[in-house]
Image (cartoon, rainbow, N blue to C red; front, side, top):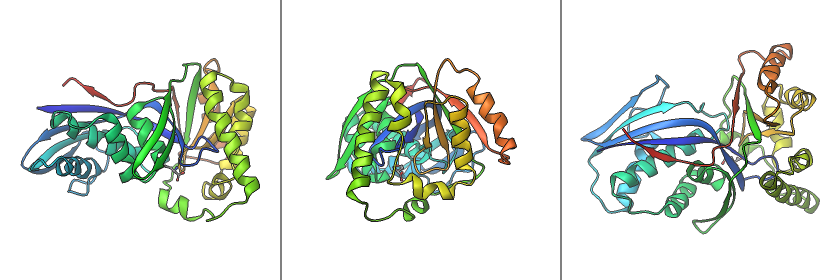
Length: 298
Ligand code: HSE
């Protein structure tokens, strides 16, 4: 049996919701899995993926076999990676969820989606990318004692999410290393009020709140300096009419939330980038994905 899995990209934090809010967008990785002898990994689009047992799809799938107590002989894995690596769009989560959902299907679905969500958060470290990668939609989550407490909300298609993707990677570990260990009560309150406003405003369609709701004092002020040109790009997004703009996940991508009626936004921001001296950046205009990971027919 061959299983084909489609996994959406995700955008975590949404400004103030550090490690706790994320959403899925309609840019997809595809993974095929088939039981085989040993480790056989093929990149179907030429993206440079590890072809040994360190491959994240492979190692995650193998882990699920072990957890289920099923002898593991090996897997044939095929990957199509449309989600760019190390840009804050959930490429690692997509591999983890692809490995878990695919292996679970090969095993006859012994685990529920909620159990896979807990395992994925354990592997990824935080639930804000891995959970929406499986569920789709907007997810607000708390990860405690290996358990993800979450709510998925479906977002209406009135918004577009425009990813402005730098020509450089930013490793999550490096983007976390610059963050302070402690924050003031004032900054804590600043963030928790905005994170709550972000979640409920997106869900209820009160988009005029987003510009205030997106502000953050826990991570963005420390990370913006690692993303050359980010301040100018954010300013340009607001000039062009974005509701909000934030660092997607740990970066390096900047994500603008824009009314779906502003059809030219992506084109306009793409034209600005060279004027700002930012060459080789890419712009992807996306919509919300409310379905999450799906197993496709092969
Ligand atoms: N919330 C994480 C961070 C990103 O900002 O470091 C991905 O899980």
